[in-house]
Image (cartoon, rainbow, N blue to C red):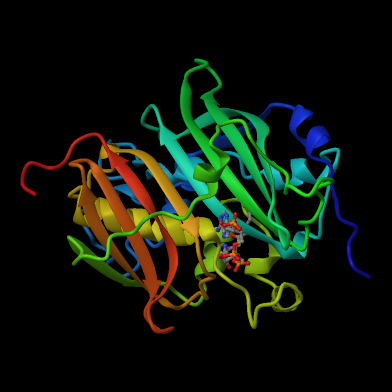
Length: 311
Ligand SMILES: CCCCCCC[C@@H](O)CC(=O)SCCNC(=O)CCNC(=O)[C@H](O)C(C)(C)COP(=O)(O)OP(=O)(O)OC[C@H]1O[C@@H](n2cnc3c(N)ncnc32)[C@H](O)[C@@H]1OP(=O)(O)O
């Protein structure tokens, strides 16, 4: 039986989520790094060992995309959100934006504050934008902001008027969901890397247990021939490519990350990330799957604090 769909925008945006904590240790940090491919193809890589191995007295370092893990519990909170019912099998991650305000400690207790800040009726789908502010619980310092867009297939068509419903707390709403403009010139850098067939099974241990990524039956119900990779895992590969090739291994240069998921990735496929530098400190990127004729799977931009003098 098809799941009931209810999208009541007014109720959804006025709902207040309870705040919740997320505690992580160095073990979680390194498991996450392995999940997004750190040291995967080179276990002694000097630029990446610091994310997975505690050398001397140095604490393990934290990759910037780890920010997206802090609110892992958000989907279960949304399941109890009033005015919002949808078929979870048809949910896809559409877009992720991450703003980093402070470097992340190697272990920490995070306090998450979430709100639904956008609802859009796309006819065949509903787009839901969720903002999550992540604080270091002890000090109250704001570490980062996540903005995730969920694409709910089959949940569109809830508008009452002839004009499709579109609300965003951060207008213009079109901009919030617009596809990134990727240059068609020769890229500044290109980085190729294989994911492992077990990549999603490792990545899920960081907190996104959506069975779409692990259960063949669920993947089939969702319309895929087999489990697909988490969008945030592909984004992690893309941002690592930028850190390695453009930031010279210095992840602290990254201030803002934006990625739109254009197509699913199957674990085991080869990802090729092409990068362009724009306006001095902005990197535009597009990641493609080698095996499927170079189809683009994730694209967006990364803002750096400064560019390496050597570039
Ligand atoms: C830690 C907490 C984690 C919480 C998240 C947990 C969830 C995860 O477990 C789930 C996942 O990771 S799923 C895997 C990652 N995502 C994907 O693989 C999706 C890839 N994208 C697609 O398949 C298509 O682009 C698709 C299907 C998304 C859209 O394709 P089409 O149906 O062809 O849509 P199209 O006709 O091109 O566009 C319709 C309107 O929607 C807007 N839009 C399209 N793709 C979007 C996207 N990715 N993000 C935001 N908006 C998007 C379009 O702009 C269009 O709007 P308009 O008509 O106004 O132009």
